[in-house]
Image (cartoon, one colour):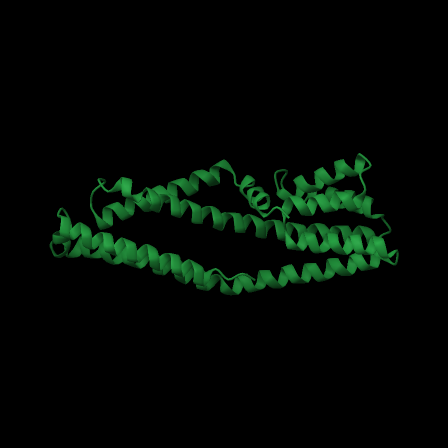
Length: 251
């Protein structure tokens, strides 16, 4: 499985407007740090790595969000496939029927609709269903999709009640996705607390600048103060990086 390609797949789903928001956020944070810690734009070139790190973290976060959205879309799609199989459709026609159902559930640029449109086109070109689904799993690099494809391939090879096996796999995968979604909801509060804690240093310094400006004035406009603030920036960035690793719980 080409994991690098799969990651690029989620990046492809990021809209230009979302990219603009990420760039504005990174630039705003960098500007805020320059003001809070230096009251000057002279150190701006030194903050280019900070801007890059923030944007990289933002891309990782939004890519994970896009992947999670796809997993929920995939759950809906295989449930539609299972429903079609239950009514007597063949696997090929069940995929086509699910594609029609998805067209009324999601926008045209949704990843799941793009994938099902592609699969339907491949099926119309008389490509074997096993190969179509295998390429689908290869493009997404998603474990749930791979599990579904593996079950489908095994059911086809066994020659038994493949429809029943596939429907059972759909139920198990759907339950797994739903359970993981519930867990992510439970730990969302921890991530929110972390984000709030990240704003505390800025809030404290800004408050002191507004109320006790003369107390902090010795830290600005001189090499010694700049050195102290630089150490503070390094400690803050290290603490934030460590915090991201702690709250990044893989389910």
